[in-house]
Image 1 (cartoon, helix red, strand yellow):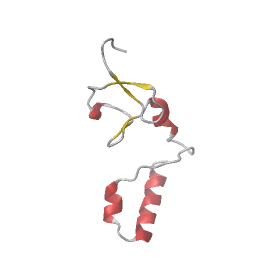
Image 2 (cartoon, one colour; image 1 turned 60 degrees about the vertical axis):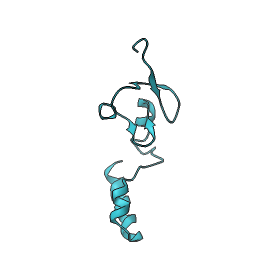
Image 3 (spheres, helix red, strand yellow; image 1 turned 90 degrees about the horizontal axis):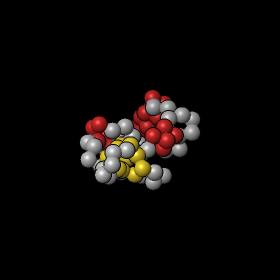
Length: 82
């Protein structure tokens, strides 16, 4: 860690992350737009069968007003990202 710098905390566990508060979000891994930064541990927790939540892009919801079609698209999205 760089002395004198302020570091972001993980939005799930509260641990200090490796990113300073002035690091642009395009240069980070595990940043959730609208929510904040995840530490490496919390970011990788959701990358296998242990995934308990999934962020679905708003575009999928807006482009599929039919509930049955939306359900199919969300399942496809889930299967692509597990």
